[in-house]
Image 1 (spheres, one colour):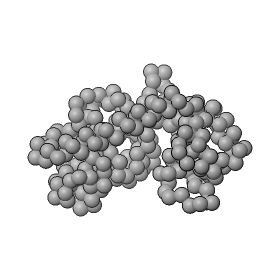
Image 2 (cartoon, rainbow, N blue to C red):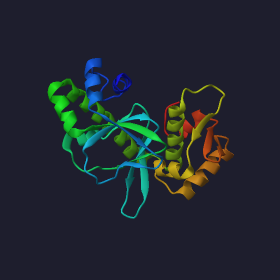
Image 3 (tube, rainbow, N blue to C red):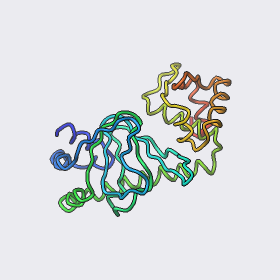
Image 4 (cartoon, rainbow, N blue to C red):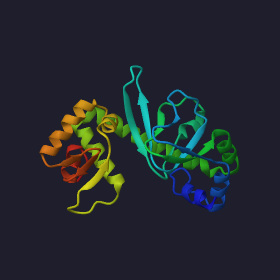
Length: 229
């Protein structure tokens, strides 16, 4: 219980609550473990719960009617997802699936509404969390307008490298990602992304090693991805 409460206070949604309130929230949550590729929920499902990633990682994916997929974001501990469902209980606007074996904490919408009545400051935390979500989606929309596919691939690689840990000067950063997953995250075909990776490798920006990509020149990738250096 204490570990769950501590994790909750590290999330954007629950960062402002005290330990006692965090423990109360934790008591209402259910722990769920998923195997690699197992869905938390599907696009179009009824939105009736919030999830907090305890261990592993979760991809948030949108799909078209013809089966094309795009990864909106990949979440790691202590990220949360499903906040919109807490507001309206409407259908899910995207799917979520475990990238690897993953453990989550699940809070039902009904339980959250009960907590909200007893702890009104949670409403402000929810608004802040939703604000961050809107900013992220706005950035992604801008990327599709102002960045070509190589720029988006470069930006995804930089973001993945940042998630891997602090950068050490002169030491390549290893990113574990398949080309299929990278294509979904950048919004391109696997074949196109493969060609872009080959081009980056020829220029010495990266080194592709099977399911791993070594980031050799992050500053040049940042510039290619429209990020400040």
